[in-house]
Length: 444
Image 1 (cartoon, helix red, strand yellow):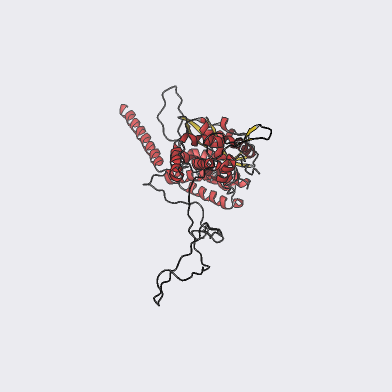
Image 2 (tube, one colour):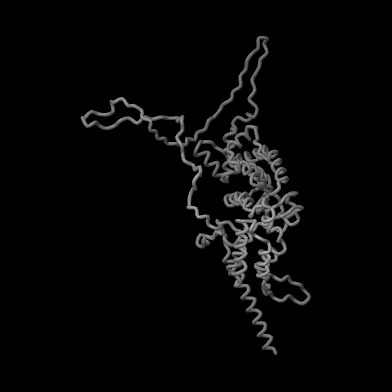
């Protein structure tokens, strides 16, 4: 009797170890092609194979016909013109340097970049009126210190730190090397806070306009603020972007949105008082992972094909086929767990395939929202693209030392990201900001 109990215990331990090995192997096999991770997170020694789920349209690689391109064109008013003199000797033996040269119509230009500082000095004057009263002129508004940065310099500094994500120290070194302008990292940080203060009103109007959109995208990512974990939330559309920093990731940080919200099935969005649309692109990556690790590969492969077909031709995809495929992939058994002690409840750990099928069943309407409402896009890539710049900032600088810097970054990035979508020059917009003419993005 004791031998049977020992054998049963050994079999149970073997089953638990095999299940754990399977979970660990599946975790090691995940990368950007079967998990919601960026390609840059893949290790260099393990590049995933290119697996595009989009069907080929038969077009050649490279620029297509009608593409405007970026060819450098000749300018009409070059700063310098050099007529190349004749050199050498003629066949008769005379030198060519003394012959009068006639300019030919063929032109070749060499664009170059010259960085230099331009210092404007202001000096006051004094004078005496005919009545004998002495008068003195005043410095212009905004010229308050003996030496201060002009709007073009401040705009370039904010553009480098908040648009190109250069660290403050490297930005200061760049100004010193190119133009001989000495700036401290603290001065560059103060420029960012000043730009954020000037852009607060336009960005607030931008956020209010997003709340009135019929369809918007949402996403969130963690960031370090003062050594603690905080969250950067993004609410965006094809033309607008709004960032906000909050201490929490859940409902307290989410805005009151009433339209259709596209997201990546984070559970906190379920409490929104609006219609939801889940991102099928995330489900496709999860289905790829299930198809690679599950012995029952027929149903995830067929469901991937159906979602791709629905994306290409939404009018031809039917929810009935979606439900049938889910029925064919019945939830597998839960992963074995150790028995809990008597009197203690223990939550059963389900497999990734079980969790995926349960989510697709429970949120069927949200998953297929792009079929029933053609204004809803297939994926949440808009929010993914808008929040990607924050991850680049995190890679470069690691985080923010204080909350003021994080909020200033969110305000400036909201404005710059919105201006970039219609291809507006962000540097000139920052110059106008420091001149007191803050740009107002188109909110319609």
